[in-house]
Length: 157
Image 1 (tube, one colour):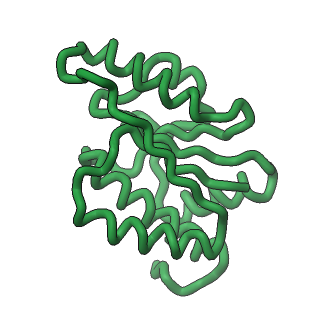
Image 2 (image 1 turned 135 degrees about the vertical axis):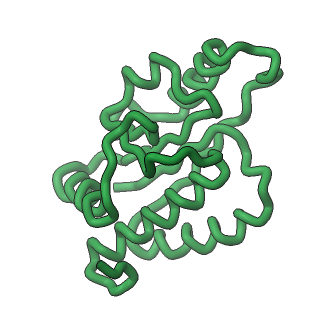
């Protein structure tokens, strides 16, 4: 199994890159990881949120395989604590050979087509974060999940 982290838009915050790189290296000790960055929609600021979501969704869908398990990071998704999230991932690793794609949408969420394609929706918090910060939070939680699965002492209850 490979885990894909799919993001819309390049990270514009240089201070996040070092931390992201660090977590990506750590994660790859446990599982194959691919970062997929989808280019921002051209002239996005001139588009309404529905058109923007539609174009972003089409770009994301082109980068997913039909066989991918697609998990949208969505505020309306199911919430997990860290152990529950680790169990969610472990179950997919044990019972499926499919790749998992965790998708962070644009500023206005996802298109109806993306919701239709999703196999799961999860939320990382009841609070709202920038997608720049969500990248780092997701990477840290993915690393934490891997250490929980492998019984390493990174996570404390």
